[in-house]
Image (cartoon, rainbow, N blue to C red; front, side, top):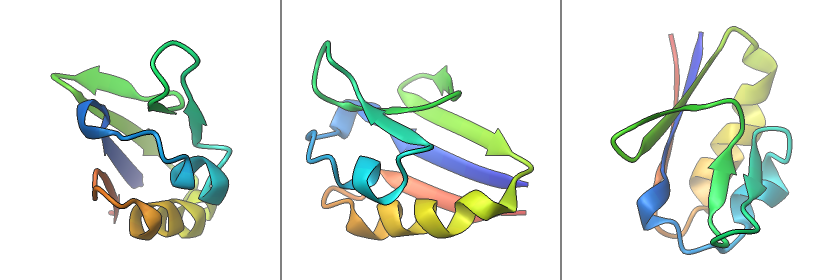
Length: 76
């Protein structure tokens, strides 16, 4: 299982995550912040749980590229 977490409230809208993992992230036209696609929001933390381990590499690139360190990727 791959768990990707986004703390959306702290997003500055730099778009790096979308460039690194476009299948998992997109920018909101409403507020210019990133959206973790198919995630569940729990008090500002958006979490995606996926059995697809092929998303790990791109999500880890997004995690490293994020200047405000609001993306976390964990494999279980």
